[in-house]
Image (cartoon, rainbow, N blue to C red):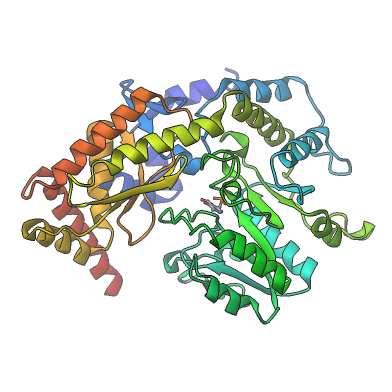
Length: 465
Ligand SMILES: Cc1ncc(COP(=O)(O)O)c(C=O)c1O
């Protein structure tokens, strides 16, 4: 019988958890089974996932943002099929490719006019690595500054700019010459840059961990301070880019012009790993400054035809389906309707966000019985309350969401930018019901809470013994 993926899938329909337990990361399987997320998804279309019983799940995680335009988008699939059927030359290496040239040109029609060159790579973290190396080479300085709670990826250089201890612990020593400043703190940034020894300040326009939105003067002042001290301003738009925040790039909310923009995730519609850095011509020319340095930074698979074709198709989809505008409408609707519930629910602090990058934050309640329950959870593990929201949303309402980071009571939504009114109504009614249930103490949701707390305490004890 000839080789067939469809045959393999039908022979191994229920084997994925065993395979992962035996050959990949068994802890991931433990997590999924513990929280009841161990589903056998069989199909995915647009904003929906389907299990073996054809139950429909609304995906508000979008593969950490890569499926901004929905899963299995037909325009992107067609572009990829065309590439395969055309038997194109790919990765010749001692050559340059047409599709990468076309995609670079298209990307630069979306970025501020000071950016005139593009470097391609295979992921978000690789884009950040490139930005670090290029900034060092272009400025002849070593030091890189990032923000507390930043997330820029998990390879060594990007990890050195990671503001969360849990990702860094045990992997050191990391890059020595890195520092961090609080997000949205201009005085701290001024102090960090004023010695004129910093190559780059790398910042997410809206921080992904927690969905932290800066004050209106922050990024314009960042741009001014970076210019003043000769530091390159690098905007990490890996999560916020391509319409996610209701503008094509999040920097457009503040009208700033960084020296580099890192992008990845949605750029290939989730089909092919891809990353890119848009930069000034001066930076590109300073790194690739002689013929013997023409390949001084790069990666074997970067600029591959599948990634480039998917990128071109994605930009077409964003334009023709008006997804930037959609993102703003979808987000405003969800945020406004959730905020209207704050008076009704003590645990609900606020919904915030820009476009379809949304945080729903919870807080300690004022009434005594609820407060005691909250304190019990917080004592076991800070941020545990959020799982009492995300788990019932998934199990009872088939809505897939995530917590926004470690140790915070924030649920995060990164929905595909194509949600319908019906999807939004479903989200609001599911949140309303789930949050209402958390206000019933004792109640079934607090049984889950006690279970979570007991797991968290056991994990803490195991760690300290
Ligand atoms: C802002 C930001 N930067 C960088 C990265 C790393 O991207 P990747 O996972 O593709 O390496 C991420 C991933 O979540 C991100 O959100």
